[in-house]
Image (tube, rainbow, N blue to C red; front, side):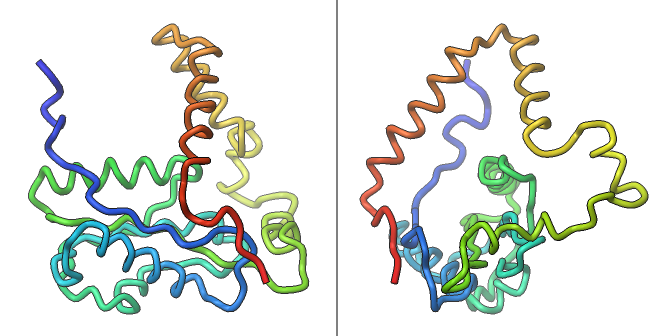
Length: 198
């Protein structure tokens, strides 16, 4: 017997904007383009969307991200579910999980999950645009410093989760490597432009 959530929900539409050095569009404009494409791809109408999950990405330090105001920018007036989620690199997967659980629980019928940012500035390197974290104080103060002090910061957190999964389930490095290879194989099949620049 399968899991009770199997087949309970589905991803019905996808919208992706060009990626690369994009100038002249705000994060809200990029998000709106992606949402419009996703709704069109799903065959739904905008007024049928009753859930919105927003991933601000890494832009908490760089600026140029999206927030709860995206609901108004998109003109989504029938929302029953609205959340701003940030779980670092696992946010996208957690948003899909959250949306599925919300739909299964009757909290929403059609949930849009969106990420967009645009911290790049023409004439500046991407490193300087995304380097906001390096401008933060080198010694985090108070409770915020406890995580780094204990080594729970950045890639270490993924390594800890990976080690735990391997210990519990016997997962091997080759199995994890196969996931990374498969993801890249699927990514190169994306028909969207590989890079856009001006």
